[in-house]
Image (cartoon, rainbow over all chains, first blue to last red; front, top):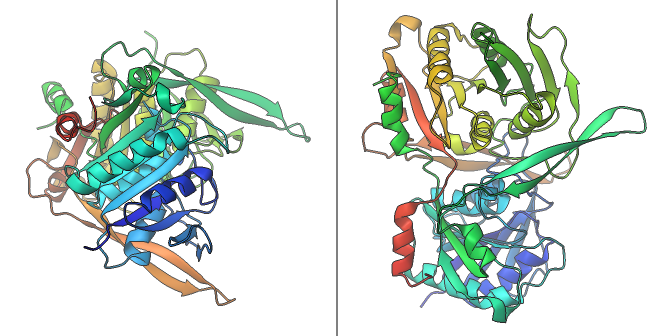
Length: 258
Length: 258
């Protein structure tokens, strides 16, 4: 039997610990090809590169048995380039993105480069999963997530996903024995409360650093934030059809159009 | 009665014809403040700027009676900066984005900087609309869309929008008399078919230009692509809750989690 073909990307760059960890896990499940940004692309949302060309280089000695490429573009560019150029004509069985250094739960999914790679794959009709660990830092510990990542990826390899859906998987930054299991959740309805810190450059001109924290006023049940707080791994199925079907009737009632 | 406060952004930059046209229309409806990117940000999706600070400058003589600022960040950054810094403490009644030079219908909504500004406002709880004209070019004609843009904006100023919803408005590039009216639609389930053209730089090294076309195999009814083809202005209500609620049960049936 032929091994499944797995394409990997991320937004923390080819140099991150998270993508190497993910590639090592996926190598146990199939043939792995990596196409990842050559520099940090966090917060890139679903950006694509239209105003300049892409540079791509093979990365030697990434992991034994794994072909790896770095690309000057965004995570979504990497998936497009991986599918249409590097793996042209081959059927990709799974796209995985991550493991992100930091949470992509709740509204962060909108800003997430990690998830844009997974959603791009879903648009292309490929089953796709984004994995994130809820902790920042270059040298964080991913070990406790490995058996779950392997299980989730194998389940999707075996069963596929419905059309138009990708998985957003967030893993608590806890010891393995603390993890209670996996919950299937909805996206928490929360938002980042931003502030802008004004500083002056050496020439007296102002510049502004954006900072923020997640403000969660969602009191409903079954949210990914609640699951993570209770030490569950949270899986949210996300879709790229942004239509709010209920709002169609609201707009019609305003006589805005047929 | 106090005039409504309208914040405007876009992704084609403060220098574009589209944003000046939109600001002139909105000036008939309320007090207008513009915070827009200082350079082209098309295809930026919902990117935000985390790895460097923002620069912001007031733009003098943008339009009479209109305060305008240019910002080094993305469209989503501009809305955040507009709300939390420029208009700190003031209630914004409407955010409008555009008028984009080019369509943001169908799957383009995912990659669109124009729509990211509108969706960012919706996340902040502000009624928001992205306007796009289905034609590229720096000097395109917006006149036929103006009465519709004014009508749509006034309707939303009067009635608001449901929580979590922004409007994606696309306008056919036709003469005024050809426009048949407005249709409330769903997002077409189509995708861009990309290709990568390899070129060599003067030093013999490869680089790649991404190009693509929209492949629309959506045979269902009430899509924005169909409405545009029939010379209707297409409005799709879009949401930032990406959860695919139907897929939650599918995942539970796979025994992936509780």
